[in-house]
Length: 267
Image 1: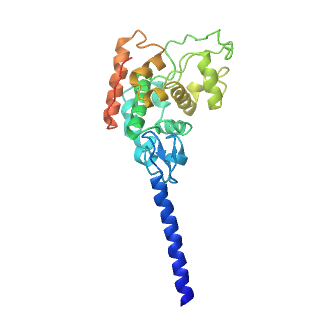
Image 2 (image 1 turned 60 degrees about the horizontal axis):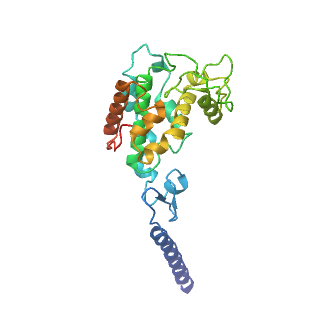
Image 3 (image 1 turned 30 degrees about the horizontal axis):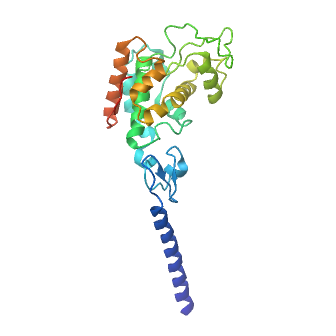
């Protein structure tokens, strides 16, 4: 009987010990608003599963933000692509499944910052995609003039291979095709047509460009306008109608995602 009571006492002590650890962990948070507090009470970047994943206690935890798949529903995706003409090549090429597969290679996309930040980023990405491809109609640019910057000897153009626009964000120029291919497992300089032939690679290159040139702009609060300059290379690229259209798409998608579009919509 005494031994049984002793075991019960030991078990109670152990439980109190671990309970104390949990309380201490919770008390150790105090993270800034843009950081997650991990299950162990440490602050860390919102792009890391170790801090924002399972057991995340405070901040922009993944569970509170929702997954990319939760935001980009089939209904949302269809609402874009179904507005393109039935004869569009993109209707037989682009798919939500391919996008989600590609997004898996870029875990920071739509998973950085607060829930509002994540939704704004996805809204911004698809606003550009919608305008650039005319509702996911185009796989390749209608103007197929090769774009080669001969000064970029680090990514030299290959004879017979054209670097015109392809994919959801219309990847262009040798200095984009080269590193995009390197990052996504294909030879961007010698086989740029891969972007128009492999739908997952196509979305991966779009996300590669986005994560390198737009992600920090939208998640740091610089606003949608800054991403227009990054994607176009200029504020409105001489086409004010397209400029205004992108802002309109962005506002619309933010509304669908239940988030305010924020400030600085123009550039």
